[in-house]
Length: 151
Image (cartoon, rainbow, N blue to C red; front, side, top):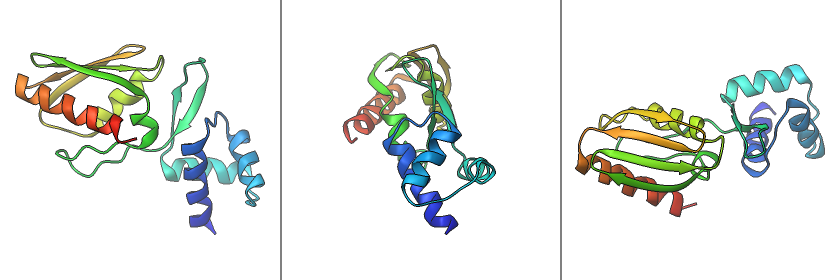
């Protein structure tokens, strides 16, 4: 039962901009899962869900960052869909996001622990990622572009 509920929560978070636990409870109830606020709170913690700001200034739950390894970057769809543009100049990669989304994307990039990325700085809709050299910046930029094209 718990695994089925967790799968449904992940599905709902991926499909809808769920802003509150009450909204998640309501959608689960409509899907046939009867849950309490305490159960949802525990599920959110166990699933490692996070909240990011939407373009409307509200917050929504997002899926945890998933990646295979530092070479094969793999974001979840919620993070990847937040990126709207990628470019690089010398050893700097610049990522454009929807307003309010850059912090979550930067945290996801940092979580990849890629040795080529020395660090990220995020504003409201822009991330600057400093790469170790120009070739690494080009490689990171191309991988990010591939990620956003594949969704």
